Length: 150
Image 1 (cartoon, rainbow, N blue to C red):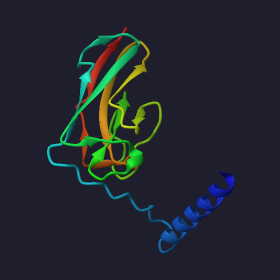
Image 2: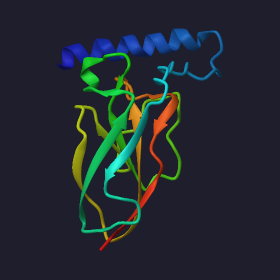
Image 3: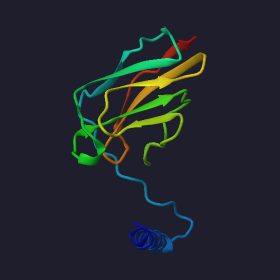
């Protein structure tokens, strides 16, 4: 694996270096976003907005107007879920959605999960991404819901 990773990393650095050679102060090019299917939407089936739940929270995701598929399939016109926990705003539109404690990825095409949250009030929001984990144009996001964890 190491023998493969080093040439790939070197090629990427060369590509970025060549792309920025004309203007070193220029930002790296943004990723082109896939057009969202008309009428596509994402929503929570569970929990409901305002629900009081235990620390292990079952979340179920709903979608209309677009198919869910694993990111590895790379099918145009499909997406997969990302769960934003206590996010203040959406991630940048022209970059992959982060994969961290507040941005949970469901790139295998999962439509539900059980997540553990500390007691308190939390917000949840769904953000559909394409096979590259980039948001659609326009973004396909759910309204934020608020839950209370006891």
